[in-house]
Image 1 (cartoon, rainbow, N blue to C red):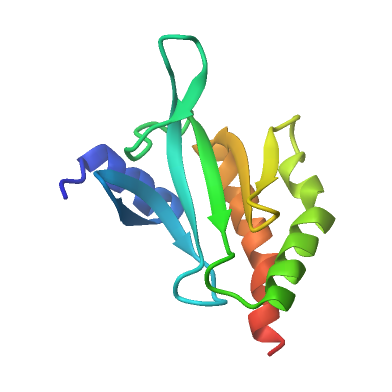
Image 2: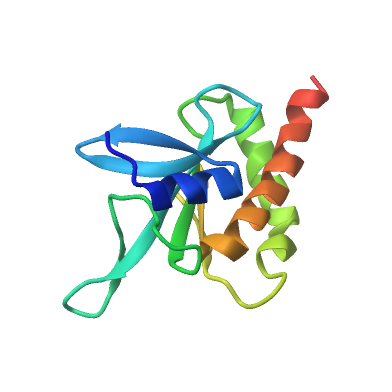
Length: 140
């Protein structure tokens, strides 16, 4: 896996790692403290020929790019903890809307959460949500 200097600078600036999910798809990533497998995946968005936006399979290359921030937590956690994560995100949606209206959604029966923002604006929101979710680990 070849990481460009620009991609590495962004990872360093925003304290992110990276994750290879297979099929040539790579993501910036950030692990939660809950489990080793629970992590945010971040990719930039691009415009398809039909004008719709889609998630790329590459790392963002600019902090002002629109990105998808995705957290999938169904496979790794018991029902009670998944429900607590869902409720914590619901209770803290104001973090997402802090500066402007940002698109977000729960998916797969609320077993995952996605929001869209620039890398620069989205990473602090992701960390704020992570801090709220990670309190579960601290209280165990």
